[in-house]
Length: 129
Image 1 (cartoon, one colour):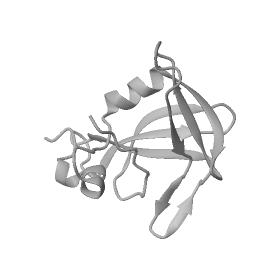
Image 2: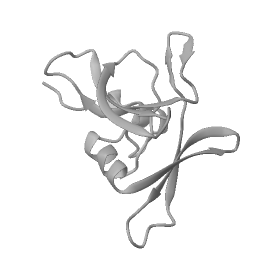
Image 3: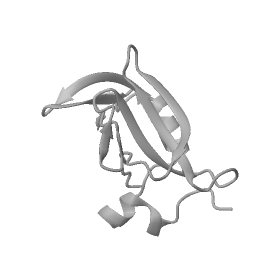
Image 4: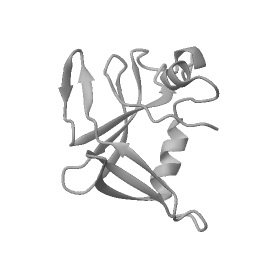
């Protein structure tokens, strides 16, 4: 009946410690609604620059790599898809799936919030509340 990862299962908390954790579905949606998005390169890495649209913060941005994902030892869609885990689980229908943010850069940027198999090697974007 869990709806989100326990902190000991949260990759951001386990790897970064402190109060770091993976963002919730609501936090990703808030980011999506309150930012503009541009595909760019930073230090030779293709990614998405997300700049705040909120008054007083329009000079603030984050950069997320468009890293695709891993399945076993194989990498897929690097430079085309940004796949990020969300802390929200899909325990009501299938405990082997979790919430994901999937951003396609084919044509215009397209955000979708889906469920994916938890064994896939998706990126994480830690947050510090």
